[in-house]
Amino acid sequence: MIQRTFCIIKPDATARHLEDKINEMITQNGFKIVASKRVNATRDQFETFYAEHKGKPFFEGLVEFMTSGPIVVQVLEKENAIQAWRDLMGKTDPAEAAEGTIRKKYAESKGHNSVHGSDSPASAEREINLWFKPEELN
Ligand code: DAT
Ligand code: MG
Image (tube, rainbow, N blue to C red; front, side, top):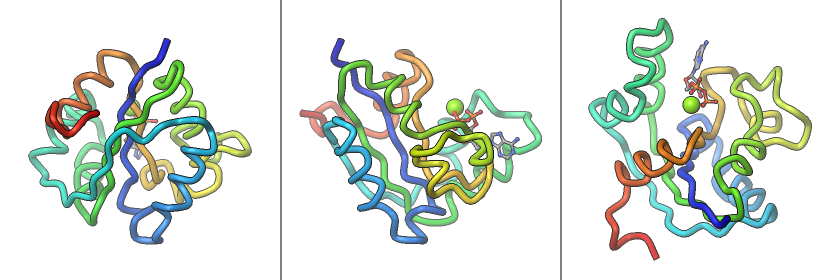
């Protein structure tokens, strides 16, 4: 089944100018980048986006980090895109991420881990709609 998922290139990656290298890994792995835009997000946007993590010890730092610099928000399309993108990203903590994954290659730490990916079809739909208007999606 062809699916869409939501991707963020996080501030630690844009700070190191890794956008093109990450997108090359994405397209080399058979994803189509359906939409992509560079944004400076607000605290409000990330408090909403990461609502599931509200109250956890890392929540404040997470919101602070995600608004510390530009991010690139993207919609990716592929067969089973949601799981395929999670697999290409690798585990949250780069120390546990498999060889060949983006987080293994580029993440600095569990918090500064370079990329985001939706974890389910419901999350993908919600996250895409938070960042993109229907007319921005082909
Ligand atoms: P993922 O991004 O792999 O879906 P998650 O949804 O559990 O991971 O957490 C969202 C983000 O929050 C994660 O990418 C980095 C940050 N984070 C999670 N657990 C953390 C921790 N124990 N310490 C610091 N940051 C953490
Ligand atoms: Mg998650």
